[in-house]
Amino acid sequence: MTKAPGMTLAASPPGRVPALARVAGARRGLPRTAQSRRNTRTGLALVSPALIFVSVFALFPLGFGIYISLTDWPLIGPIHFIGLSNYQNLIHNSVFLQSIVFTLKYTGIVTIPIFVIGYALAVFVRSNRPGATLFRTIIFLPYIVGLVAESYMAVVELQPTSGTANFVLSKLGIVSDSTAWLVHTGLALTAVSILVIWFAAGLTMMLLMAGMQSIPHEIYESARVDGASWWSIELRLTLPLLRRSIALSLIVSVVGSFLAFNQFFIMTDGGPGTSTVPVVMSIFDTAFAQMDVGLASAMSVVLVLVVGLITFVQFRYLQGDSD
Amino acid sequence: MAPARSRRPQRKRRRSGFGWYLAGGVAISAVFSVPLLWEIFRSFQPESAISAAPSSRTFGDLTTANYQALLSGQDDIIRNVTNSLIVAILAAVMTAAVATLAGYGFAIFRFRGSGSVFGMVLLAFMIPFQAVLTPLFLEMHFLHLLNSLIGLALFYTTFNLPVGVYVMRNSFHQVPRELVDAARVDGASVITTLVSVFRPLIMPGIATTALYAFLFSWTEFLGALSFLTNDSLFTLPVALSNVETGTYGAVNYGLLLAGAVIAMVPCIVVYVGLQRYYVRGLVSGALKG
Image (tube, rainbow over all chains, first blue to last red):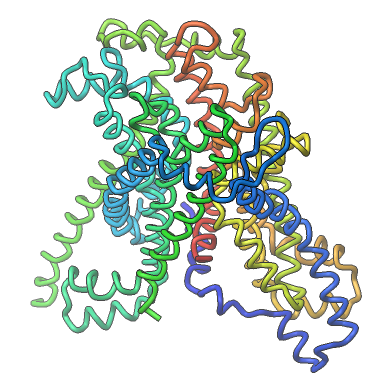
């Protein structure tokens, strides 16, 4: 069984990693010499491939998308600049508005269970007791396998008469064996949510566990000497010290839920009707089925802003006063 | 004698606590692994058993028919698996190469403006690729990168670079300073130094970066669905959506399960084999925040 070497990394905050070369340059007291010019040239040359990739396939599309969202972008013929019309149309686009409400609802449903279960699992596997590494590995498997393959499996197992889900649940007397999970809005959302909680709990566990293991042991020892109980140590020591990891795991989970697509595309295809269409699917349909590129780009810009805002707010809220 | 006696019940309690811990661990592990094992088992049942009401009579009839049909029939899943492998390996190699160079540049050659360039690379992490799909589609059309496995791999590389560059920069930061100085005094060329002096020290970082990009690309769905329209170029996850909707004829859940298991197994093998590198990436990527 291997111990994760990354844990040592977790112990040193990134800002405090010794910047070797900065010291190397300054030590000689020659800040603006041929050496430093050569450094700049070499450094830029080395980072330029990464910069080109990111510029071409991420930053440019972002700017291009903002531009498209301000035009009518017809499939043929001249492009017209139409100001904020696409954004005004968004306000009246019922499918898009519905998709935002649905995505918020879905995010609201899965976030707390993922966090609570992930936290409990992290507490369980953070020790180095025998077997902990194996448990960690197994609990993390659903995340590694990925939601796409699991969604296909879920489709098969959620079939009314033949699926394992109804077989087991009807034996337990919870549902009837003819329950059609994926054609009823509430049931479909329930099924997808359970699948996603099962899928994502391991990731939250890993992120929180890394945070827990980076808390110095001495802090706990002195608390134990003082006779503090397990619960009060967990609440008064671990939770506050874990703010950064909690913020991160919540951001990863909430942003992931907000960008959900695969599980709904595969399991419900947005149905019944458009009742389980998440935001990304409504953008996808607007762009590739309705070919309304301008409107789809406006939706995308809104999505970038919302996701940015979620990240910013959660980060601020959970990290703000710990420094 | 007294202290020894008082310690005994405590030790006993600890041992029974350990028993509870093991039992709990096994139960929790079952929740997360039995569904996956069950699907592997199910994929060996005949189609008739998968799509009919469960019955004890057909339960134990195991067959490789689903796999044979999938791998030999018109569906030609082998081609899709090959496409997935090409894209995932290409993306892994490109991400590792580009991230290594960038990490080298950022960590060893501190130059003016390197902070803002680094910020720009990390900014790509803040941009959800789901949100730039439409403009990216038009751009890739213009660059003739639609319906191209190379185009898809370039896209995957980009969105794996932020984590990769971060991991590689940290790897180079951990190279002992004496080694950096010695190499410089030596006058060895930049690339020679990288290959002959730093390589052994940064191999774990490279493994992390490549593994990350490989798993991301192997399981990615939305981008492949958007940028590939030619059936023969579909990656495995996209090809399975055709199996699911019965594009190739009647819906066959046996084929779908077998296909999903084929998609799942490489992830498990690669992860279990290289998990210390994966966790390392997760943690250092996580601390970027």
